[in-house]
View 1 (cartoon, rainbow, N blue to C red):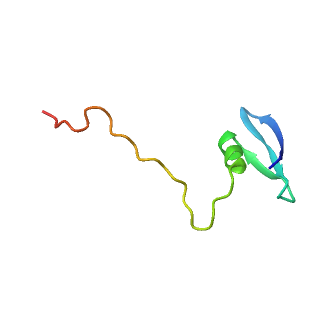
View 2 (view 1 turned 120 degrees about the vertical axis):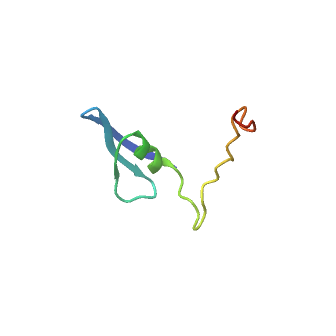
Length: 65
């Protein structure tokens, strides 16, 4: 998929709009995270993103004194 991204700096924040081949009108964004979320492929209906289990930190199995 191809995107056209317009980016500008607005009071120390990144702003702009994203247009894709499948979207008729550009979608605005404010900040890097919002831009990244617009570039992610859509999830299938009812699907949740897979998050790997967090490993326990070293020493987590020890009991405190």
